[in-house]
Length: 297
Image (tube, rainbow, N blue to C red; front, side):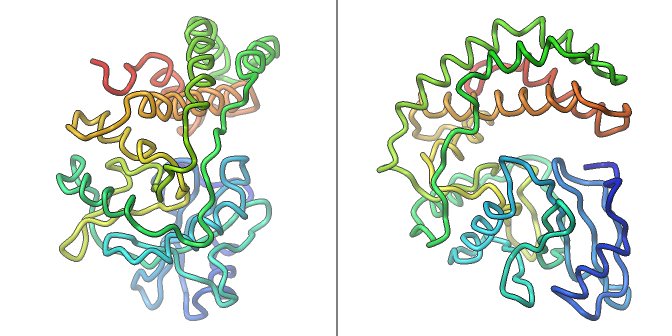
């Protein structure tokens, strides 16, 4: 998130880090990066040592699911995994109010300008890895009655600064969303748990990091056992020639798209101020309602 959370201060974050991860920490700095969570740099004597993430409590990422995913990632014996750091209590997550904190070591580097050429090989190695004990199996996050929920949402007041624009977008594309939801429901039935492998979930360029002479995959909060197309959809979207099941790629494109539409619609129907994050949410809603499907041009 680009804006600071209204209910957490830098002092709160520093005290949490000192208590659970690094008692020598003497400064933190909020970083306006990423999306969906808040982030801080943690310093000791002027040097960054930790990267802290603070996730809201959402159905998609609860403390329990985050703990399971981070523990699973840390158990992977793969050279491109940048894992979370356990706390003094050997947990990977710690509550802070209604939010969940986790940290990784600070990794000085940069994001690539485009997805790296070696990504298909990295994903093949990930998908061949033994399943860690804490890895959870994928299950759809899309409500079976999504179309009804969206129609009900549209009957409410959309009084925030960006609410009318968001409502207009949703009304314009509501029929298409209903069709996607029906197609998604059919494709979910084709997923075979016997074929599930370890997946990152979001291996796109924003979660690739160049440092120490190699490419790392970061942000493992979405790790699940799932069809490999959960990751391969990214490669198909990038135009890469990879062996895949087109129906499973379509499933995970629709899973992402419908999840984003539902999340942004709820956000912008509710109270908001029109800040940078709200405008980003409106742009995300417009993008998901109008972009081509993966594999289409």
